[in-house]
Image (cartoon, rainbow, N blue to C red; front, side):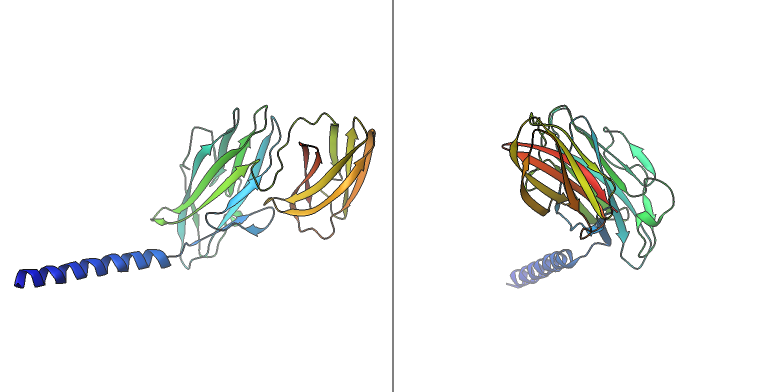
Length: 260
């Protein structure tokens, strides 16, 4: 009976310790704030950023991290290629060093003082510059990046970059109706003009997305055979990277432009 009583006490202590540890994990907070640098928008932990690409072109995204704790900390970043489109290649720069596609973890860490951002450190490539080389045919690629405290691995934030994935619908493909699509001026401050060369008279849809894949405007348009010019007011848009898409039937042609 005494042994049974002691065993019950031990089990209660064991279960209490598990509950306590689980509670600490549940309420633990990261010291990191992750931001889309160009768009100046926060990227929540475990969220997905949708990004369009262009055939045979490198697409880059600058991601800033900030140490929001009250003490100095050092951080590494790790890349995970969940899936890559045929011919696509992912690689990155971080903490002042650029790495090839075969390197998945940064070899150098970035040290940030309390409330300091990687963008505030002098020099090049201290922020994460996430690159992907698109292949000759567009497709969906998914790449995850994890920022983590070198002294405490659980102090981390992971984000997902999804190229040409839903919900953006910015899947560029060969559009026989559009022979050229340009934006001028680019960067733009008041307005930009979309110059579209169409092979025929056709109805289309013009959609503009921000760098997070959210639609900021959408309207139906009519294109004439030959050269077309569409003026687009950007005064109400925040500074950052945007993507204009011309959709005709099941085909889409996309152009990146910058609002300053």
